[in-house]
Amino acid sequence: MNNTSANKTQLAAQLRKTTQYLMPDKLEDVNDGEVYNIYPVTKLADGTIFSGYATLAQYIAQQKTVVIDGYGGVWWGLAKNALKAEIEKKGLSVNFIETSRYLKSAAEIDGLVQPFLGTPTSVWGTKCTLQLQDLFELEQLRSQRPDTSSDINIIIGTGAALAGWDAPLIYIDVPKNEIQFRMRAGTATNLGTPQMLEPAQMYKRFYFVDWVLCNAHKKAILDKIDIVADGQWPDTINWMHKADFAAGLNQMAQSVIRVRPWFEPGAWGGQWMKNRIPGLNKDAVNYAWSFELIVPENGIIFKSGDNVLEVSFDFLMFHNNREVLGKHADKFGDEFPIRFDFLDTYDGGNLSIQCHPHLKYIQDNFGETITQDETYYILDCKPNEATVYLGFQESIDPAEFKEALIGSQKNNAELQITDYVQAHSAKKHDLFLIPNGTIHSAGANNLVLEISATPYIFTFKMYDWLRLDLDGNPRPINIDHAFNNLVFDRKGDKVQQELISNPTVIEQSEGYELIHLPTHAEHFYDVHRIDFDNKVNVSTDGLCHVMMLVEGESVLLEIDNGAKHAFAYAETFVIPAAAKSYTLINLGKNKARVIKAFLKD
Image: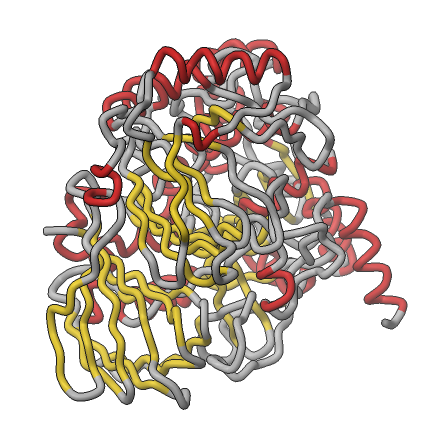
């Protein structure tokens, strides 16, 4: 490693707290489909993504006056200083107006957002109904004007577009995983709040307040943006013109989408991903989750030459939700409704015994529009050693169960959970159904592909095996929330009949089977598996298909519009409804099995 690279690595380590590597600002081409790629890209024409603050400063110098807005969590001080240095190299004077100076006081902002944060000890709040402008002294912000004595004028910071300047608008985005890594390192705080809080409380405010306000603001100014920039690096920036960016979104929405996954360790995490996915930091104690397709926190990466630019997935939904969701666009709007993620307990531990909220409960208490209905697809497991906990024993007594849970928590006493909850042996390609209110857990020695509705943080833990988190702190237990939602008649033989999917072949020909893995009546999505030797043609029928190669080496996807992309084992990819039809070609020596999740009509 040369000195420049070493300095970059050291700077990133100071500003971020994570075992996950910072994505390079330049990537060489890789052969898609050979191995799982942690940096998937959509390729654009050469010369459409520009690298470095010097190039951005050159653009700004030509404009004279610009607005630089962006997401909460951007390192605004670093961006300002880098631009100032580059502009002054040109012999030009520059006047910066920082939006942070026109925020209301921290106390006022805390008062405004407090109703959406629940109690200090609560894991959850409620989706904020404020607007970003409510956090500002708006009249003061809008009264700011360019200084005519300066060569260059820049208003910079989250909410800069609210000033109403008639000038080119630059928008700096930053991935949400990077926001969290900055938060943990103390280099990013919540909007208008300089104080560092405990990470779980900061995340709660990001989720229920900051991200809600920033997303609504981003959507509102989308048509006014002239430049889109990626601000995830501490020492450089990549950017592109809005017209090229929009063309890239259109290209993606007509062909195929693969988001950038990200990975997190956890108290119960395993070793499957660490041992099998190239490019991950092997020094991590484990990896519990992969955010394969949890789009509120995923980004999408564009690549031009060697330069890459990542933006959050919401840009695609704001710009192209109809192409992506097809006949379901009116129902779900900007929300992408299906989630894929990995739960890795391979050589790890059991997840907590848990359930998720009913639809009305999540709407009334947390402000979500859809609830956390899940399934567990067993992508891999240790034969004869893997278990899924699902449904109650026939003899379940709710009052007795609640008393046992409270006693366990109070006395830090082990609970024989199978006295109350059924344990099922897990095999590769099993699908366990977890509609809201169902008690469940993934046991050790599984690699679970969780196919779910998109909400992802509303887990009511009842028993966590007396375990501490990776920082040595007790994990939250939510017995009261759980008992407001548990469905106690999902018990006994009914569990096998209703909560374990019974696959049926619905189409068949030589070397091909289309297998239906029925979901529960409460699930608004369904699951097919396509098993084939050579190739298969598929129509979207106006639906979005979320897919993964769950057995085999590699598949080639050919869209009818000519787009082609190869995918390796365990990579998630999305076929937008607007793709209309596509062909999957098996590139491996053995049978390919591809999961397809889609919305029910």
